[in-house]
Length: 282
Image (cartoon, rainbow, N blue to C red; front, side, top):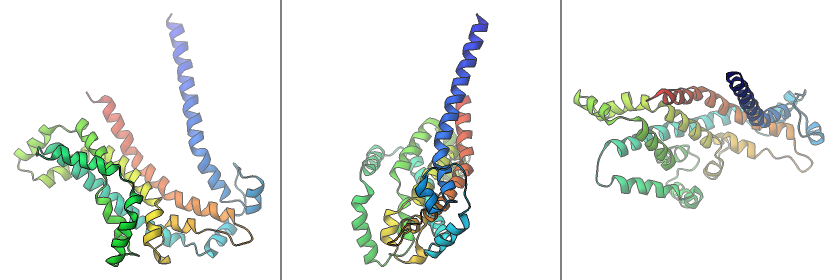
């Protein structure tokens, strides 16, 4: 009987491993094809769009890319400034708002949270025209601040942080710190932030990726080429009237995606640590 159970467990484990390996391959394959196409020529891509092996046209694609006024260093710096600022403001102030919604008992707490949920239903495109007119009237176009400062108000992130604190925060910890004489900001920065590391890492990934890939608002507000972000530069990689250099386009996309991998792998360990901690928590 026990031998049969061991065989069934072994079969189930093999099935789980096979499914996981298949999902990993399915997730990695599009990025691998993109990186391989970045090393291939336009003729090769037109003949066979999918290739799992690199080719020899990486340097020529890079020359074509730079020749099209694509400045990866400038675009990387601009995107990093915007995305880094957006990520920092989003996770900190959203965590601070969620902390206030959980710890403090005030009369308008529930209506305020309902108002935050209602704002989540409004698409950003609806307010984009009025936002652009306002920025134009105060001469804030071609400036990174209009793309960074609105990240202070991130309703979806506030909702996520609040739900996380509801499950993980013990109010007694806050009360004990208050009895010991700790200030409110000191409690938040030294006690609450470490507790929220997994949630902060998760939302930092989402915020950074969303800001890095954002094309709509930067394309509206930024008209100076020196302030173009990576997505804007990639969107401008059009061919002339004769042909499009697909290899250089894939190379530009590859350069745009690489920082996202770095951010994800740098923060994923905190998410895994939080999941492992939650698995053994009583």
